[in-house]
Image (tube, rainbow, N blue to C red; front, side, top):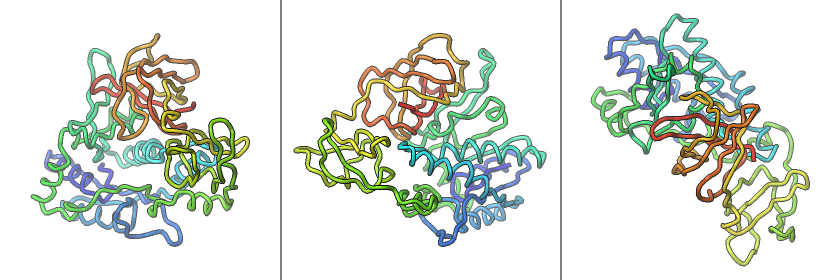
Length: 353
């Protein structure tokens, strides 16, 4: 069963599995529909056009296509959490939640119900089974520019054993060339870039519409608590942000912290963003068992951020403390921290503090 998003990557994944001799079914999840939702948006996925494109590609390949309505579950597990996290002063990554609760939970359940053996996606990652460790392991893609391992650290052993990633060894250019050579309708389709349910990029306006609440204004203060101006609601800001502050600090000002207790936005110079350590909750060890003691690794605290050398200290209650060799810029609560050992994805969790 192939997860068909209507993009070029999942289209090529379907093609490669079919050419490898598998009996294939393409399934597209309908995740979000609302009054005024854009049914055609070049930068977002999950639109009506995407669903149509997936069906057309399946028709071109001569395989069956199904649409699976997941709007209620998506609203409960992804959108509600997105809103709640912003309201709690954090900056969530809804793509990680979508992978956790929809692509590799709901979709796998559907796969088993339909009697299929493997779930195939167009993600740029690789997997393998380690006989020495007795575990399935997730690895970075061969194309470092397209590697998507950061958003897949939450996969379980059972899920990884039933997953296939045909594009993991390909470069993006190769995938497009394959699509063009077979005449697939998605061959030149642009990649999705924005949050699917916020295609205009205005996440604060979406949150206010969804919650029915207006985010209260408050003071912008410097590191010493001196009032510099007013903010338009904490949901409109994230750690490391510089634009839209409209305050004078004598140098460039950046968001350093959001304080919900007194509804203040704390700003400071760029060096105030540097952090040497963090704690992460809901920590999931994937390719290795949880270590009994501290270990060396590299860590990434944002999707496309370069990895940094660090040490990880496992803590009770599925938590971990990560200490970096060098200070890291704008470590943001709510985002994920993902650990690596070379090409291997060790695991990850949600940045807590």
